[in-house]
Length: 544
Ligand code: G1P
Ligand code: ZN
Image 1 (cartoon, helix red, strand yellow):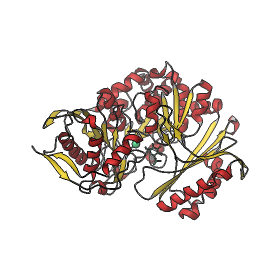
Image 2 (cartoon, protein in one colour; image 1 turned 30 degrees about the vertical axis):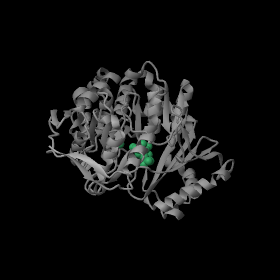
Image 3 (cartoon, protein in one colour; image 1 turned 120 degrees about the vertical axis):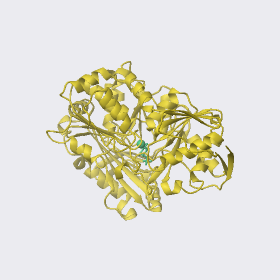
Image 4 (spheres, helix red, strand yellow; image 1 turned 180 degrees about the vertical axis):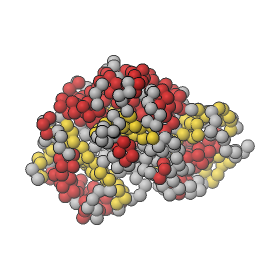
């Protein structure tokens, strides 16, 4: 067995975005491309040498090949132990769980989350730190700087290891453990949720559920937990076999992409509870019969009801939401006397707050919810939280949410995405909006009074690090809001996201369709940002 030092040249595009480095598979297949980035991780995260690492991915095309390369590089870089998910699979939350449980020096997760998979689609890689969370900017920037200087990487000659059997083997000195993470992850969930009570709910015969794993990584976890442990009918989990191309679909749990699930929740024969998760299992969508729970509302309902759920009965310390997420959780926090933090987009910003015990719960409008049990958002966790809640309250999803709105008011919410637009045009649009902000404050736009208009900047309350230029917020005096930002996860051109929120405290007026309520705000947003003129788009690509 030889350790090779392979000469290489830096690539200039390896700066991680909102959630790791994401590129087309073809880019990752460019000779030395993956290797350079992985070597930059080993060069900057020096505890890995002689230390331990968790490794796995969402099963998309190139997952297995990348794992074999990383294992051989781990051996050449002196990693003592690598814990790998069976079949190379680890949901992002399960990876976070393993890093924490086995106290490793970090983890490498291979995923492009909800982006499509296949030879012409997306791939991604990210490093998680020993707390189990996505690396903070200081770490991703150090990795990026290293990629700009790298001139060689280390790799061992070795045959592919068998990823499909639980067990141990060695590459040179490096111990490779193939583990079935479903077991560790289920154990954690059983600690947090009342499995017995949920089992009774399914046993009652009066409750039905459909979970759409979208041919992605959560299939095995969902089959085991819902059907085998909790007694849900066989067939409750659909699209449960992970596929390299997610069955040709877009593994993003929203009303557009999880259409089979949505259909199963509709009409008299619709199931009582519907849920889905994304490519790597960290996102979730929650549905009742003929009813959609916005992720922002889900966070608020979870916060308001945490005391009813096993792992959280002793109380929560605080809550955080990303800036574009609706302010529904803020209202709950205010009533409960809790601190509510507003962070930039991306889970990494919750890490410090969770580690410092300042928050127990956190979430994003982009179908992400989670708690201090790990350091990633967690799709199955959110679904189990709702199941536990439904078992305790014995009400429908819809009635729980409507009661919530009665007490706290309703934050209508929608997001418009303009995907794959010209990058320069998108940047010019943001620049021009930014230039207008000062003149907007206190002005009247179509009858809406502007209360504030700014470019969001965040000072981390724990380490005082500053993240500026995190999106433009325009807030109105009636509690409504428009937020503009450019995506940090796209792999083609730029994606403009426009987030719209309207507040309705009056229970009599909480039944209007969201599209109708949002109309005036949509017009204001399109005009203010000159979206059609600058991007050539009169309609968004996706509305969620
Ligand atoms: C998107 C979401 C963000 C989420 C991230 C990773 O990032 O908006 O909330 O944390 O994916 O799942 P964006 O593309 O907007 O930068
Ligand atoms: Zn994801």
